[in-house]
Length: 253
Image (cartoon, rainbow, N blue to C red; front, side, top):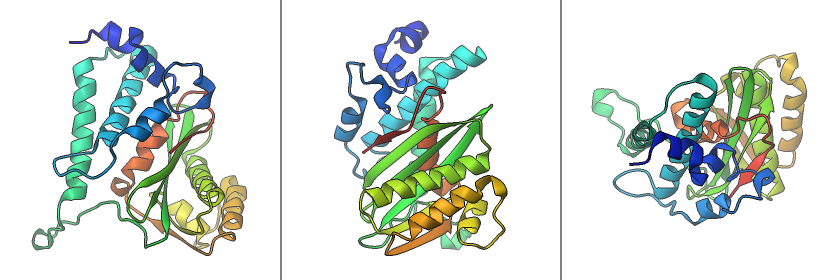
């Protein structure tokens, strides 16, 4: 059994995760290439739970969050809890997305749906903790394969600005990669309605919305749709990796 001191302060694996070295080029001096490691993990669907890549991301997320709570909030962590929380979140999400729609009970199955053939889907999300905001996006193809994901620390901005930044960054990276048929989905109805010109755009995001509309002009086809928070879980998890003032944007494939 790992001791608390080793897992959260001495173990190079945990320390490097907390410093975001696996996801950001600023820490390339570390002797372990986390991006390459993640890229090699199996990401295909499995029948009995989350795939290996999902488990690895969840575990990294929980280690990072536990060390933050320990150092900044004086909350004593425990290795077993890190494993249990990561496992519970992953299994709960897998169950939600694996069950068939239960029409007889009136329950609605909420899950991520792939885009049409030859399209990519951009899921985006923003997050605020304390006085810091972070953004994240995930780009997947019509087969459900992750093609690109990114996160960054956005400093002291509102959740509305963070959500809009996440959408703009995800869309910009998709267009830069050459994809021109794009389905954009996020759990911020305000941002989606603003981009679709259904509501008045708040002044705080007016320039960002202009950027998004300009980027949209480069697409052959594009659609912006609102989804529930539960169906946007992966983008939310990626956004959580962006906290820490010294971290710039990090993109991983």
